[in-house]
Length: 320
Ligand code: DP6
Image 1: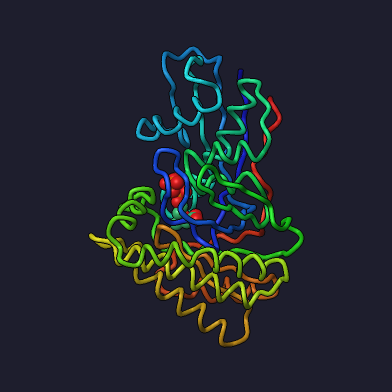
Image 2: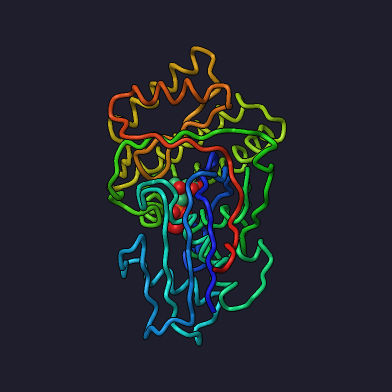
């Protein structure tokens, strides 16, 4: 009747941007991501609560705006004839600010819902169900470095390396605390419809995905750095060339990129990636982490830093 699960957000190094099927929320391109460790979302789903319709509390605040998306995700697992659920979400990082909060939320939600209604699913099936609600959420079902292969009918999500097989670290430079002006789903649709670069973005993605996968399997940091930065900037080129344009960056975002370029020029193993928001994620080897932290802390406009290793996939929490 009641279950709670936890998931961590993931950051894509090869990005998902664009959908081949909007009804099924099927991504147009394959992606590759790292699942984080220290940032988390916990979701509890209670079908036994005396409520007339689904209710959603996010960090203690009723959040009706998200209710429909959450209810639909629960329906996919528990069916539409189910009892109403009381859903409680808690997280330790900002929501809707380009920190992949929907990825960890929906990954935790599918695991909690399946357990609360007594169903057992393979992780792959849970990943596909989470992906129906938020494409990137599918990847948070697994830990470490994860691939998502986009197919015409469904996605295939696979763990590529466990967290301890390549101890990368991620440092997030937060440059703005508020919610983003355009959600990623709406922004993708705009890019598909209006960016002159969209078709070539999709066409070249398999090459980038293959290069990144090889780089990960051979632990080739420099190759992964080059292809990840290139892929990130191509995604942002699609956003910038959409009409009207979508620019998630602020001046501190650019300052962080300069900091990372300067760290690279002094031999540090670090590269950047940026999602649908102004935050900069620096991916580095452990020996460069302290220098990256210090340099980003001193960068104008950086409000706070989050440092994390790679972590595990979504998991059920023990019942109280
Ligand atoms: C820039 O997974 O949030 O973070 O499927 O519409 O919910 P929906 O999109 P979402 O998009 C993530 C976009 C991204 C890149 C990525 O995570 O691959």
